[in-house]
View 1 (cartoon, rainbow, N blue to C red):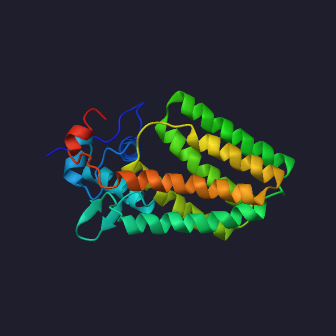
View 2 (view 1 turned 120 degrees about the vertical axis):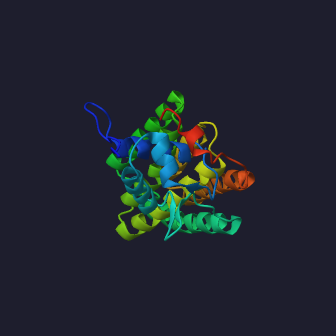
Length: 233
């Protein structure tokens, strides 16, 4: 039996097309926590080979966006309330240290970089781009860690941010909000002014609000009908 073609001239490579579609579905909360992504169903939905699907699922697993289980397959993560609380608590602790390290010591180029990032966040909000808003919001926190000059802390925080981005996608995928950029702006104000108590309070409130929104929606139902979800993708 002839195999399906996975490539054609002047088109996005099939693995990138599939990766983008599944990532978008995750970030928009259209996949249920714990849902299995079955290779043959995805191959039929995307009209590509199972080899292409396998490659994409492995990539998503390496990024922490899917859970890969030996001899079982790929699943959308299904964190417990305790899991969610633990990760946000870790972020609170790590990011308090980053704020303390930066407060009152921002150089002029650093201030410009942070303000430019916040402007990019606001443009994404205005454009209504959920994926770009999520990406930029997470990157803001990683930018702070980078500016603090602690590579190991940055690497650890990157893992925590990836998890909380997924939690938001699973349980609070909703509307684009300018809350993140506004809160980030207030945090940078406090860092510039050397107001450590205000900076710490802003960071704690910001992360706490993110956690509260996720926990409020944990357990909501999304679809696991892969054929319907990816029709026309």
